Length: 100
Image (spheres, rainbow, N blue to C red):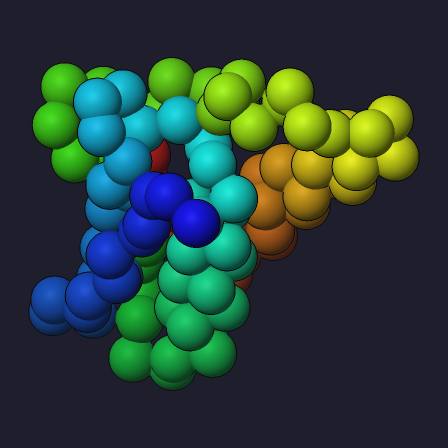
């Protein structure tokens, strides 16, 4: 699985850094990492804010279209739902959220 999201907490702020060079597309690894990072941040009562950023020259380029070639229609629909769920989870976070 390519791409990852680094998670760390500094002074009550969870920092989620997308690391999928060169432009940080939302690969399966990144989607999983975002979901896991959000889950950790939400469960940690010491976290008062969440910052989402990208490593390198881009924040997030969008979907990782290199994954599309092998998807069936149902798998594509699942991918779309997963992406929407991640965005929805960001919106529902009780902590302040900043995307850089």
